[in-house]
Length: 131
Image (cartoon, rainbow, N blue to C red; front, side, top):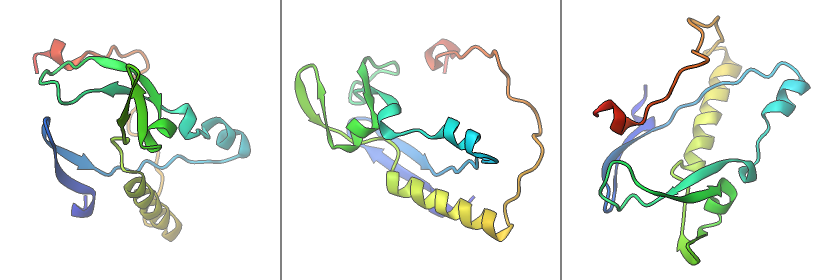
């Protein structure tokens, strides 16, 4: 952990939050693997959520692509609104660059998995957990 990648933040009409930069290396061993993971901003979708609504479960106004979010403007209910992805693109690129440097220098190596990820785990909304 490095304090450069953990920051407190405040969203107006929402409150305080924490931003954490996380890099996950994906081993690419051949072109077939590379082709299977390439994703464009047009293919990544995110829900439109109004964080100013003071409830834990907020309504969704649909989905938009990251390309639309990064354009700076989306249309919600026939109204154009300013937009941005929650993730910082420039900070994401910095995390990826640092991770690449560590891997190239031999300071970050891949190991065998500690445990497999569960395949059929049911996800529960936070409001159902009593949190």
